[in-house]
Image 1 (tube, rainbow, N blue to C red):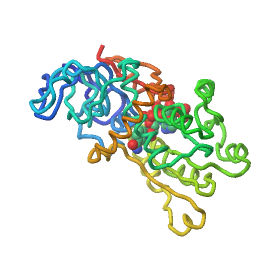
Image 2: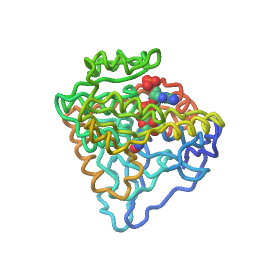
Image 3: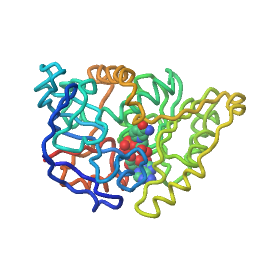
Length: 339
Ligand SMILES: NC(=O)c1ccc[n+]([C@@H]2O[C@H](COP(=O)([O-])OP(=O)(O)OC[C@H]3O[C@@H](n4cnc5c(N)ncnc54)[C@H](OP(=O)(O)O)[C@@H]3O)[C@@H](O)[C@H]2O)c1
């Protein structure tokens, strides 16, 4: 079978497609024949050597797949074999075949293609945890979604619309038309102007109830300042550090130095909350994540969860796929397909 191997830290030249022996399942595992694997920003950061959670290199990245169960271990119900599924994978998903615990698979909704199904786990679970579980977004409240045109951003927009919140989103201007067609109430071009005064003006100086921020560093301080009373800030990424080589290390160091400290007393006096989320640190809580996933899959049936795949690249085009994300061209999800 073929796999996408990140052979070291560097630019896209470190990405290679290599042949590996086919895997066999352990007693409580299944083997999935992958039809599509999600590409995430974490894969870019891992390639750049800026993702501490990534496996040692050479490694096969990939947090999520859709495909067909090809074999099941001896303790797994054999009726799984032949089923179309979607799964979280603790790396290794960007491969023609992957082994996962049977508890980590969910039946693929029939109305989704394999490519759309592979766009669900990371983006929608992250957005669900940020908005519903930790952000406690309610109808009539307001939410600012940074990078609203990205994978997590579009997922958050779907969920915020379902909740009935007023939605604000920052994105590169080329994505604004798409975003307003998807229902975003206020798109803000944060590339050419400072988003903060624009948001203040749009909210009559109040700020918003919830902000989800994957940019990191000093940007978290800025987002915190844009909350209204009882507002919450969800921090979940450090996109600001993305760069190859020494520049990336420098940017990451700068982000760490500029990361704000939140003291209890100002939080108390300003009625604000801050929280962090790392979905990759939830592997020990599969029951919780399964509850979220079931709600998301119900949303697919009810059509308020609408995974949007911008492009599918073949494994051989993985370098192009990385570059597409790095150049901010994607609207929603980028997936990798074996052929
Ligand atoms: N903590 C978690 O559990 C978790 C889970 C999933 C994702 N994340 C984080 O969430 C963020 C979004 O992830 P994603 O996979 O959905 O990817 P994505 O949003 O599709 O990421 C690409 C988009 O981010 C925006 N962006 C902002 N700063 C950027 C930069 N310095 N370089 C390139 N693009 C930049 C660009 O859109 P615009 O220019 O239009 O804004 C770009 O199109 C990432 O920081 C990722 O690490 C965290």
